[in-house]
Amino acid sequence: MTWLVQANLVNDPLSDPGLLIDFRFGRRALLFDLGDVTSLSPRQLLRVSHAFVSHAHRDHFAGFDRLMRVCLHGAMPLHLMGPAGFADRVEHKLPSQRTSSRLRYYCAVLDHGTPCLAFAFEEKLRVNVWSEGLSLLRLGVGPWLNEAKRAVRRGAPDESEIVISHDLSMPLGVLKQHVLRTGRGQKIAYVVDAAYHEKNVDKIITLARGADQLFIETAFLDADAGIAAHRQHLTARQAGDIAKQAGVVRFVPFHFSARYRKQEDRLRTEAEQAFRV
Image: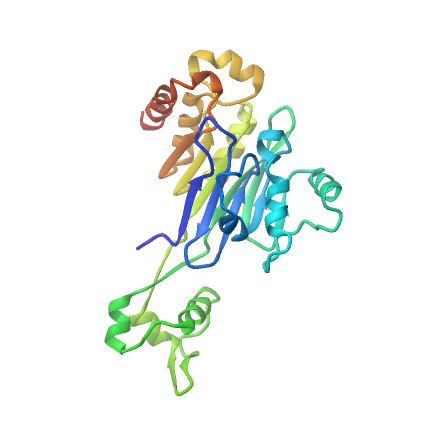
């Protein structure tokens, strides 16, 4: 089955952290953190329906103004989520903007010397279209497919009629048998700026458990664990070990310290070794 949600880092691992989760056929996207977002085109930003900010340090929040300039007059509402005090910062920048969210997601408040949110997004149910089934029933694609998918996701009974055209409808059960394929939804977790101690580790593992993708900060090599502890960040070994304990399918290390500008491969290797051991 093809993933209908694509997750990509906004910048390279040495630059401001950020993650764009794009719904390929849903005409919307989620954005985790708002640091430097100049790499995202206005068209990409206009797809953003929800923005989640881990905390208000500049490298996680500097792109807020650009997002607002692009999205403020867009057709789709923009929902914002952040830690305690975030609403005050948003209202100061844009008094008429309100923060709200109707999206299902998970978050954990981590310790970074200041509260810092980690996020996870999970599809409730993935519904794909089987093209051979469409051909078998001699059906064409159209808006009716989205309605059929919505009916499956909300658990509508099989006898529910799905209107395909003005003169054709079909029971949902028939479409589920021949056209629609369901599967477990994808889970994506995002973790930045966290001190390494038992309470944080337990929260991250709980949040990311079983994730298909975990994007996790890998700020320092383990040889520099003392510096990491002082600055309240994770090392590559710590990040890899957390990913292993969480049982994630794939993890992506990022948010590297600038001191490793020519040593990115060492960070990735150390994290990967901890994950695989």
